[in-house]
Amino acid sequence: MSLWLCRAGRQGEYESKFLTDKRIYLTWDQLDIDLNDVDSQDNLYEILIEKYDLDKKNTAINWASQIWAGAFKMKIGDWVILPSKLNRTLHFGKIVGNYVYDKSQGSPYYHYRAVDWFAQDIPRDRFDQDILYSLGAAMTICRIHRNNAEARIKSMAENNWYVVRSRPVVEQMEEVDEETAIDLEEYIADQISERIIQRFKGYRMEELINEILKAKGFTTFKSPEGPDYGVDILASSGMLGFGSPKICVQVKTEANPIGRPVLDQLIGTMSNYNADYGLLVSWSGFKSSVTSEISKQFFKVRLWSSKDIIQEIFNNYEKLSDEIKAEIPLKRVWMLSLEEQEG
Image 1: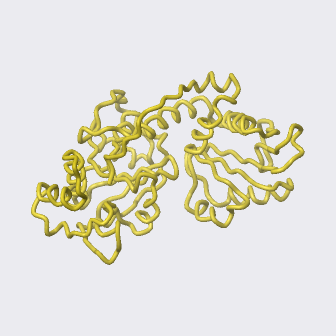
Image 2 (image 1 turned 135 degrees about the vertical axis):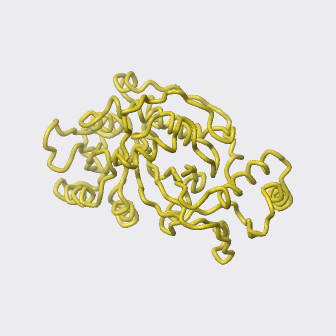
Image 3 (image 1 turned 90 degrees about the vertical axis):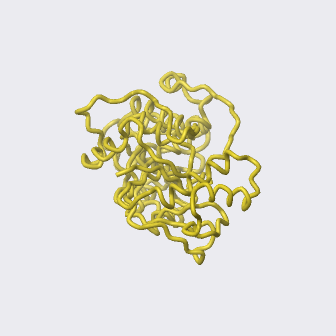
């Protein structure tokens, strides 16, 4: 069994289609050629140079290697990891079909492999940092095998997606496959996420969310530790908190994505407290039964996963309390954004 990384667009724009269709697509725009008619990866390189008028040789080599791998180097039975851009989770699938070219699918869905998505929404925080580092390869498709990744992830799958600690944890951050750059945004988020979950488990996560809301200008009331009767934080605008919007906040730090009953409970609590809106916070993200309700609840409820919490920390860091900043010490860094690696 080989292990492959596959991305569903730079912003995860194809993720839902990948999962719903039970496929991975080679999402190079307007690549309307049947790869079965291409003799080799070298010939594909020449085709890409001409078709996309590429003046950078390395770009064509990079694209050809990824496309060829997705079509022919991936074998039936190989596993695929799809990092979510919507939640900080990973989806796992098994290749169950050979390469197919179907122009009727429309661009960029001409090329695909059938996949059995056997595990979805597995929190990234369960994986060792060196594994996450390898998954940070800034490519659409590449093989993952550093630090015995294939065997370790298979062991996790057999252990309900928890790390098997009978072996020593590999701490070395090795260079990712294909000698490519890593997705720095994802790598940094993993580092910060590990720090946050170490310092703000359970009730302390409520403290962090409360501080973020105060930094955003809300007056808040946080329920004391213990039974919360369906609400962890109340927030409203104004100096004394008598203004609108009035928000009920529920915070969850379970190890798994939360489901629809928690959302329904929050909506009921909003009515009990005469709140205008609700904020549901789940560090491990949300099941599809919740995300499918996003459009219906757009004018009432917002969802924050760990990805959103980290972004809110970035957005409001200077206004957070000194105590929070001491526990999450961050430094702003500016860099060029180069996006030539992905198709």
